[in-house]
Amino acid sequence: MSLNYYEIALIAVALGCDAFAVGLGVGCQYCAPRQIFRLAFHFGLFQFMMPLIGWLLGRHILVWTKTWGPWIAFGLLMYIGIRMVVEGLKPAEEKEECADPTRGFSLVMLSVATSIDALGVGFSLGVLNQNLFMVAVWIGLVAAAMTWLAMKIGNRLSQKFAHRMEIFGGVILILIAFKLLLT
Image 1 (cartoon, rainbow, N blue to C red):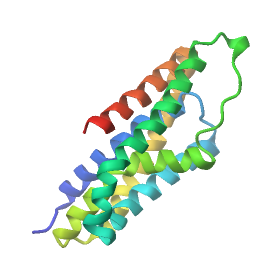
Image 2 (image 1 turned 120 degrees about the horizontal axis):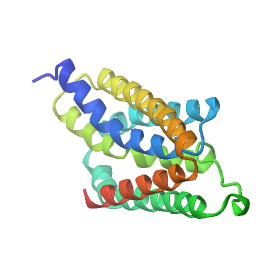
Image 3 (image 1 turned 120 degrees about the vertical axis):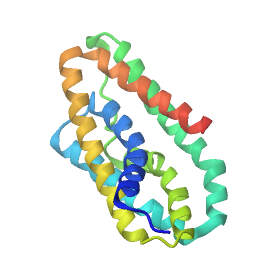
């Protein structure tokens, strides 16, 4: 049984939804061209790599990932989300410069958090004997495009609604954290 292009597209969009939501939240505050590129590139790269890793490592790592992966993603997204909400609630004169989540360790952890579901998809597609490489390429490209679009939308919304969008972006990250934990 082989997946058709429609099914591959649906899988790619479904996996890209977390990247879109995080991109929307991050784009509310950080939207320079380099930041957009870094986040979109890394989210796309990790979404590409995770199905391949899931397929290669099989059930043993998948069991560990299902147990601890959601908790790691939850903690990171909660931390960044709460920080964004707190910063959004402060008056403009009291705001301090937050660490850019499109750089360093935060970037890597956000990339892992948004692509952890792709490990299971990789394992499943490997069992079905799919051409995993091409599916992974499409998953990565769609995630990168969705992240880029989300950051642009987040930036536009933040220009119109100012600090309220920073709060909104933080709330989105917190909701995603709970969704990852509950699913």
